[in-house]
Image 1: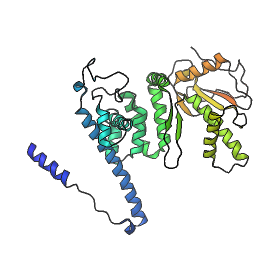
Image 2: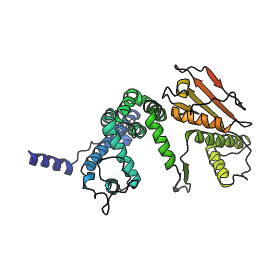
Image 3: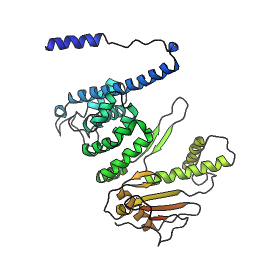
Image 4: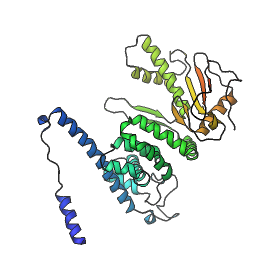
Length: 352
């Protein structure tokens, strides 16, 4: 029997079957559209097959074969890229990067994605393998849920998978994040604190157009504040007649603010920040996530943010706003404070 299987595998391996395709110029518009849909389905199936191959290869590289602790070549805590996945060798992502001919970071990302699909999101993986869910949406679900436990991931999957193909990718990501934070608030808060320790500024090398990308890992409240200031200044330049696209103006403003913060030549502006939180979450009796300018954050993060505002006596400076919306248990807005100058009596405080 084993010999028969080997023969079949060899035949398939040596003589792969491909579907004949007519020249694209022969196709009608409807047929081109159908072919494009088939291509997307094929990519989804290929991504699922790649994940299966990665996990199978990882299983063949068990950690028990690695050097024992304290011996030459043994794992050093905090250095292995795939340290979070117990069972596989610490050298696996290095091997995978060579096989795929990609960087080790990319290899680790694909391994993490495959691990999440196969161990935490079985229905998502099945839909991907069947070509019913595109690779990008499946990848976003995996990215959001890779650090939570299988139970929470399954709950988010059950809630979102039926409508995943009808949601824009950004909306699917946002909904998955909101649900994950709500269902696994303690773990989300722990990850936030760990992320603070690993925060950094990243420089991605220039492409053929000579432009590089500068990115920073920031708390959500600081990120929305930074973006709002940059956006306001860019819109001022646009209103003054600058012909460049608004995106190019935002990039120009950010560069000026960082390189010449005291002599940028830009007018002074203040950010507009809106914090939304449930009353029960502020009281510590619920894990319902809050929002900062629409970005979901944990209830603990909201309480920490409001406590910091109160402790520092922060008020919205002239031209800016610091708004707080406190919702009831059903999402209604019994309290909403928006003002350019928030007094101490109006500022919400949070338990510490």
